[in-house]
Length: 389
Image 1 (cartoon, rainbow, N blue to C red):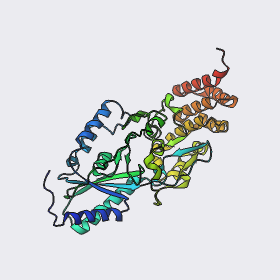
Image 2: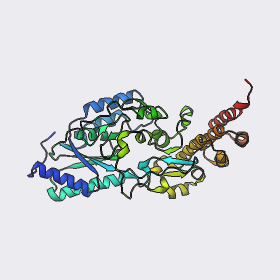
Image 3: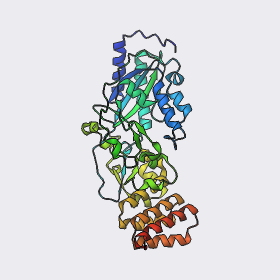
Image 4: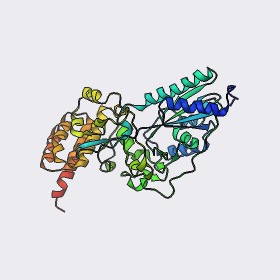
């Protein structure tokens, strides 16, 4: 690591400029840590990859972790990391009925990745106006290699919660994180002297048992992964535990005591009331074009049209609402195979004569082996109450 640029500014003044630039750009929190290697966090991340806990995320690999844990590998001459937090917590808007699907709070508005990067660029540009082109900087959100939560914890922006999220005394875990690596000689903040203590409410409340130990999440079981990143069939044994979440999940955050008094945001980029919940049958009936029109510019596009319809089937099955049978029947006969398979499961879970009639009719014409398997299992589930022991 080199000595970095010569900045003829008092450390306190330089830090004041950093804080002001972050506030001007719209960030709620700013803290600083050194650009030292995140050795322990690197080893923990590599261990979780080896244990299979990150399976399903091919981009989260050992090479990425090793690079992201070494700020010098991301910016030659790195000396400091500016850790930034943006509050996204909107007012609560509960679903109107059982046929509504839930969307995680961070996704109830514009996709934050581009917005965060534009704001971090503003921070760097404001500092450039004061300092000139005498320093270097690179900035990352969670789609980059930077170990963002490790940086935020070491900078004192918050502390690691047992659900793996960063917790802040004012904003709880409702924070989007960004990191600016720079060769500026900034004075580092100390980590917060806070922990979750004996509290572990987030662990037993996870419906899919994804929090396998304090601070350890099995990505393969997490509802956020299953509804967004996972592109294939959702494991049958996890579907009934997913409730009516169709994009992400906030359950482990909702029960956290730190979040009870979390400050809500007034930022218009978040809190769209039409995204607090969504009619599941409407989602199931959407065309590709209607889907794009409804969700353009939101994080929901990441799950894609077919993924959200798959998720809608699971949520409808969990609702147990017989009025969903016609919509699921339409999906069972016209949707792509992935959606047809989950529609069959949902009909089997709802049960009843109408659901059985739909399944039996689809069985006659279905040629896809995976869908036929789901239909057969669904028919068995519908017939089970009437079978003789």
